[in-house]
Image 1 (cartoon, rainbow, N blue to C red):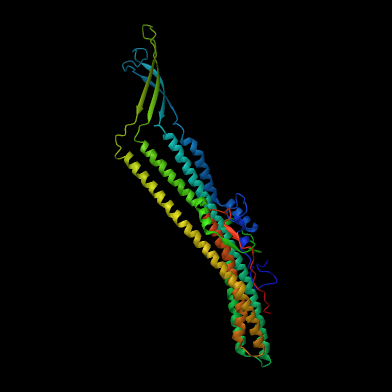
Image 2 (image 1 turned 90 degrees about the vertical axis):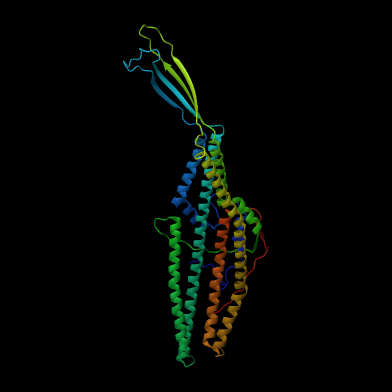
Length: 453
């Protein structure tokens, strides 16, 4: 399995991580690259986006709503009808009375001015809302895949560190048994090393279970029929960076799909309110009728009739109908506006909070890689040398040597946290940002290697 750490520096994670981490902010991405991702992760995201049935359902609904836009602005279908008029009931013949007619008529309903435009606008806003919901769902899925994949990287690295710890404690135990055999050690040191070895084995079991759980989660997200192996992250490294929280917040206000969806909701509610107000005005029903008459009994040819009529709705019950529709539409508009303003106000703070978390995690990561791990390595070597000449206790020596690998594991946690927070940040921003939202520090920081053999 490929290690995440340099082969010649097992104790130190790649401290120079961060410019490549955010390099996606500068590059042009493909239409499917919703968040920055290395090739292995991008393949998983593409697979998840392609196989997810809920996304396909949302995409189909978005396309269906788009197709409804022209239909919403079209006139109602005209009606054609046939009728018999003024038929005498004593004979039911068509040539007895001059007023008897065989009629054919055409009827068309014409809505009040601008109603059709408003209906088309409302359908377009609903389609935009559904499209924004689709984009938000895609971003959420890409983020979930990325977070799980980086978590898999941490667990795999922890397993590798656990194996190193296990080998280390096993060597210490063998050395302690050899020292005890020649009368130069204590039996309790053997027991202590054995207890530590058993604890590490228990931890390995839990880590393996965690790895299986994460892989199952990735199989679920990618909707795979048969589970297959998933390669963990490898060779994630880069340079230092400075994040512009203000520019990221501005980008989020422009690109966040939830905000875009709420804007479409506001437009839909506003248009529905205007339509409700237009219902105070009548729609017109225009009818054109042609009536054909038979010859009368004397053989006289009777002329045919042409009739025209216009009917309209009367809002007689407007207090219980139209007025309540307008009031309900107004409340829907206020509700949509309040949801939009709430997210609009919260979003910059959420971005700033994530930026602060990333910066804090970076500082802690630098502390571990540049100070704690090298210092712990020096302490481990010193404690080992002192133990060999009986100047320190066994507890001090084994704790010092184990402490180094524990610090490496915590550094690995911080290392992958940065990538996870970056995926979450881009999901809030609305995708990989563009422009100079990040500034290169023009230097890389490096940890110090050590050898604790």
